[in-house]
Amino acid sequence: MRTLTFFIKLSIFLSFFNSYSQGIISKKKETKKDTIVYKTGYGIRVGLDISKPALGFIDKSYTGFELVGDYRISRRWYLAGEIGREEEITFEDFTTSTAKGNYIRLGANYNTYNNWLDMNNEIYVGGRYGLAIFEHTLNSYTPNVTTGDTNTDIQFPRDPITTPISQSGLNAHWVEFQLGIKAETFKNLFIGFHGAFKIALSIDDQEGFQTLYAPGFNTVNTSSTGFGFNYTISYLIPFTKK
Image (cartoon, rainbow, N blue to C red):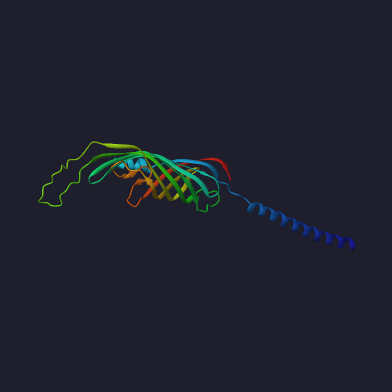
């Protein structure tokens, strides 16, 4: 009788111990599963603004080329910049002028988008400092001569002046604020777009004529502000994953 009671108690204890052990193992598995971390690539991303060749194909008065790049330094922050060259002919009522030169923009982007799992997309805000070194040419102009009276003959010639007048070594400095997106369409391949609002700090004028276009800044308005955009294809060269 005592032997039977002992075996019954032993069976109950082993059953309880087995259930307790299974519970611990199950919790460990759940804990391990919950701690899985999805890593994304950190490295240099380089690309090309495809809107500039497209614009040059449509508008024969414009040619441009721009390389873009960024380097990821943390989960949300990227060092970023663009470098390029532009030439643009501006047609006004009485003048035709050309601006051509090189530019660079340097700054940073902050990614506001919360990616799922191992996604690597961006909706970002960014800031840049821009510098351009360019040449400006007054190609031709027509003297705007009038007497203010239709009954009085004009005494001065109104023939167009077609001798170009150029000045090189001009500089433009500005800051700009960007809002853009980058989407990973294939592994490490990104399609992007951004719009920019630009504020001129200083833009040199050709002697005797105001600069109407500055490479990298675009059209110079009387408010010293401007706008820009780009469409990019870029590729990430990952150095590590975090």
